Length: 308
Image (tube, rainbow, N blue to C red; front, side, top):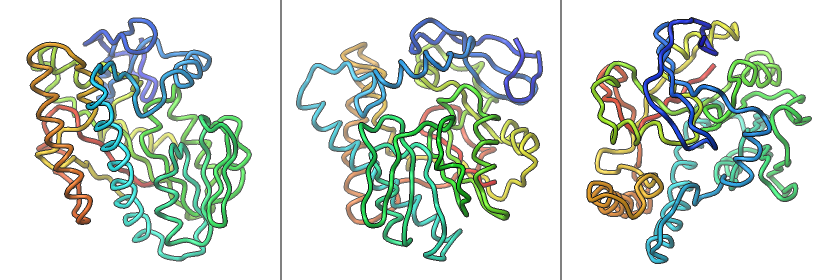
């Protein structure tokens, strides 16, 4: 099996992921350090999966209605807080209020609502919408990347947060976005980060935390460098970001529902951490921090922001 990014045949299976309809191998590429699932889902399989599962409660087999309500509340708060941090980063990169901006995969619209405070008009596309949304400063079309007419326009900045890892052809996707940029424009991309150096030492529980999900790809610097070359673009920024240390992430609820003692312990700690996250966000403290990619340990809670 060859790697879908660097096309190396030096790949091997390291884990069995059952989260995407059928059991799939998680493969590791020794050529570019990419983790990817095989076989990759077809377009129809992905469409069916996300229509059925793509919501705040994806994978949440939690019986307690109280915990579900807390989970939903904190999830929505987290979306707002991280949107605020992303908006601040974008505004430093492109401070002109007339900047033409598109977000691909707008979800609930949290990021667009934040950047609408800075810019005259912003647009997004989101395939899960029931209908198009438009207001004085925001337009969100119900479109996919492949069938989008909005991307045919020319933008100063196109943003895509935590979407690329869910799409079966990252090179094709980024080329489509590149074609929607004005000369000198930027792509701002965020994806999960999985440094390759420690995966062989992880036990089944830790591997499950990282790989038992619907992510088709887990990225690191070397494969992002390959993407840059394939696109004939420059890598203008590359940061590894982590939720601050005492915040482990709400996805623990989805991975370990009503399960082992170890899973229940993680869930309790996660709940406390999430309440701490909410408190920090309320007083406008950062809930994330950049970290040294070469000192980052393998685990969940890390992602990459890179700018092309």
